Length: 340
Image (cartoon, rainbow, N blue to C red; front, side, top):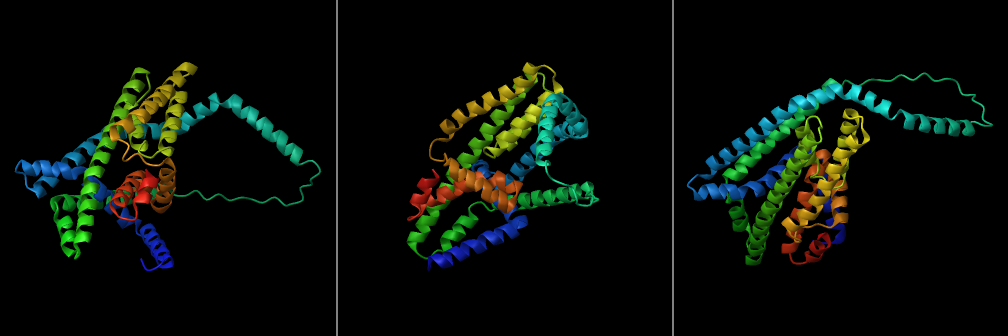
């Protein structure tokens, strides 16, 4: 680090590059995180006389099959709800009509007071609304998503099949013994702690999804598996994901049921399960990787701006990686302490 100004310019250039190269950076980052999660499984298979390329292929085939089967089971309910969305919103609008009328009357009264003493001398302007082609946008988004998934799986396979090759190469090219020791500590800490962190996150989110599915099924909610899967995925994003799932469950319950208590039941069940998860997660993960809420919020905003929805999903794991790196580098321990 030559100076503060040069370091600042380098960081700005790095952020600009990552923002512009998100089609490359997001699959690579996701592949690296999944590598930390799955590498212990590869080593376990290797101890049972399964070579690393074959072990990587077995793991990826199992994960791809599980994800494909889940998406196949949830695709039909999701498509049905997308088709019913306009009618569902009309039903919801009818139930909220008294509130809407009160707000409309208040708005009209406010506009009337604002028009007192004003004369409308401006000519009428005819507005032309251009309706975008949604099908083309959806096809483009699906193609981009599938390309990103394919790139991620390909990178992940070669990372898992190569085993510890990249780590050994990195330690070989470092000349000083101190640098090799620091790099070895960082790699070991990243793999050990990130694999544990990601595995525990998967277990906690799966447990939340299973408990929510059972609760919604008991309460009579339609397609409980769809909303439980959405909760398990979106809850990875702190604050924003939980609020989105709460609104989603409330809207579906309001459209489905007529009784107030029947509408409130799924919402209360979700809030209770989320509160229990908030108590259980720190106990399972330990205090070492419990992150500063302010740092988590800043990370969500930053990575969401840089990489969109994918950035919000990757923000917390990347922040945990950065904290682990800071904990193992002399001079950055205070930054790691701030993030804790």
